[in-house]
Each structure stands twice: as C-alpha cells, then as structure tokens.
Image (tube, rainbow, N blue to C red):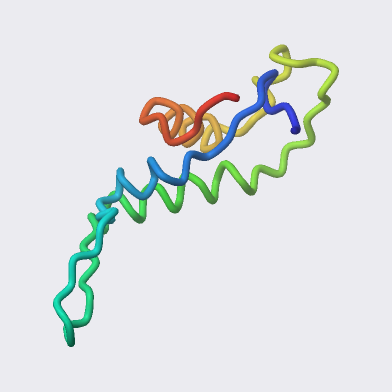
Length: 92
C-alpha cells in the first residue's frame, strides 16, 4: 500500500455505484433489455473528481507526511475532500 497525505486511502467502488444510482439487483423479465438508471450529474461529478484525484501531478515526498499536503493543487484538495466527505474515499 502507498501512503497518500500520511494515510492509506482507497476508493470504495460499491459506495460509488450506490451513490450514482446504479441498482444492485437487476430484475428483468425474459426478453427485455435491462435498464440502468443513474443520476448523470452525480456520475459526471464523481468521474471528474476521481480523475482529478488519480491524476495529481505534484511530486510528493513521503518523508514529510502531512506537512506537505499544502503542495497539492486546489482542485485535488476540493475533489479529495468532497469524495472523503461522501465516504467514496476511505482510509484503510
């Protein structure tokens, strides 16, 4: 595991799936195509925030730990905090 901002975090894919509105059970009748309904606004926002968090280009020095978190970009901080607040990112 790799530390991020002094802790080990992971993306909870099950909660992401639940948050954007994808139903867990697929009830279909024979011959019907299953329909998947999602909240497109939540989907796009979560997609953009995850993209921002996963593509942060700032070089981090792991030895500095939490002292260096001010070197992250503002979009990274907003996206990370938003995903953490909604519990879509959790620490291990």
